[in-house]
Amino acid sequence: MRSAIAWLWWRVSRYPLVREQPRVTGSRILIGAPHTSNWDFVYMLAIAWDARLKVRWLGKQELFRSWRGPIMRALGGIPVDRKNPAGLVDAVVAQALTEPDFALVVTPEGTRSGDGWRSGFYRIAMATGMPVTLGFVDAATRTTGLGPTIKLTGDVSADMDCIRAFYADKRGVHPDRRTEPRLASEDSDHE
Image (cartoon, rainbow, N blue to C red; front, top):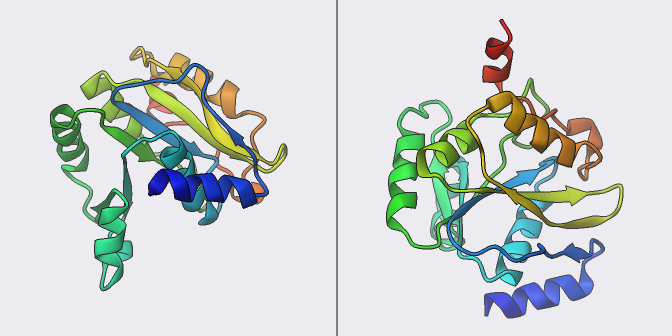
């Protein structure tokens, strides 16, 4: 059913799908960036369903209130209390280590511009050994899809340089909301 919905979506979408080459299997983290619009969520689901991935994703707990909660959970959502995020990374790591073919979508910059990316994706990848796939929505080329999959090394600056190089020419639906791929720990590395 999901693959049929994805097939239909890609037939009518104004943004053609760029499928990953070569196709990656197994558990991994998928970064969704630049994340500048709520439409990115729809693209993420269509990309995942086309690739036949059973994705999990982190979303603010407000999305899970009332009638939306069961729908968001059915779509793979994991609620996050942004005011009290302690233990979130540990909980996700534990889940990733027990679920086969765990595919976690993370939008490290959120939908609003800020000072940099949140580091949860990096910490989860390092704790689990999962590779990171670079997903994108690019308004400049009007394409969306999955880019390369990389294995993080633990050298935060070098890993983020690789990620920055990929996203350097990517413009989100609202380019003015784009946040530079930079983790706070990179700044402390240079002090």
